[in-house]
Length: 517
Image (tube, rainbow, N blue to C red; front, side):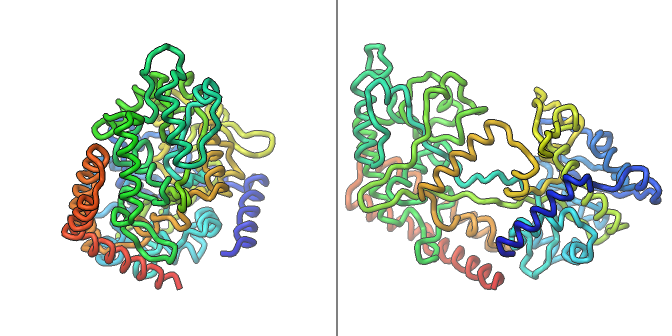
């Protein structure tokens, strides 16, 4: 859909909301014959939820005349429970949340109903309008061209996982500008180590604090300084739109050389190799760190008084390279599917679609209107307070329910909490600075569909390649980089299957691109 079409769709949704056009009133719906359906319902492991007696679903039942009996399954047993449900030939009418192998159960075994027919025929009007306005239909389209699932999406414009935060108080104490290049950052870190910015007379400052192999608090983000968008799957799309394998890029070795310099000079915590996020957070909360990367500052593991010490830093760059962080994107999760044995598909569609009506959808996440959720004078909704100890799950399903909110639509009907707005502001800053990969690697790793054989093979190769990358990175950072060690890394990666790994991703991406034409 073009931009004009998306805008019109969003305006239509807003008009429906503001005019009070919501789900049909309960008294009208109750005139329909009562229908009973069964559902296999995903449940978070450490939270007790009673879906069958939940206030929210009682309201949906009143609106639609559809009663649902929930078979609740905790996260660790979810995949096996789904498999058993289909194996015994006594499928529930609905599969709700969790995850589902659409290619296996929909395309190959024909155990799911294609929902595109029902969408086209108007059985899911609320959901259809949201989906059309998102432009993300391709993520839900299976390899045979049908849609066997309803998506789950909470879009908040998040375009990357980790942002860099620099100690503002230390910059002010030492009268330092915010660095813009790798050389300037290196000098800043040296000043943090040597010039006692915390003013206690000791050299106890930690210039850089990171974990190891991730894109939130890990050193993987530091490779962006040298133009390499290193992510946890190691593949990305280069400037020519071809799949590249990051550890074989020369920038990988150049970054490792710089990290070794940081290690030798004592400018980064030597425990980064082994410490997890809990230890990392404890150290940052001591208020004695110069630079780290994190999701955001507010409403995180950081103490408020510590978070207040830091400011956002745009990724620096080395000479001859532009900074390039991995780009995040809206990834649609599995929301719901209707099985081929469903006793009343039209009733199932009616029950599901009622949950995508704007007010119902926001209540499902945030609680009852007039209590935890309020409607402002401008027509948008906002949270008045967040109950403690997961109390919301007693009345509404939160992330275990149905939700599909593209970014523009979500912003038009909902006022995010302050910490959400903080993250969005950082993302806008990085977008404007041009420091994100042009095309997200998520198209390779998440969007382009894989066969079960491809998925299994990629998982096996990734495990082997990760072992090589982890070992090489530890050695290079702690012991230095030589021509021999760089050559040995390339050889070990090839022996571990880097070429096959890249080729599989290239093949599935090309296939997916062909399906979009």
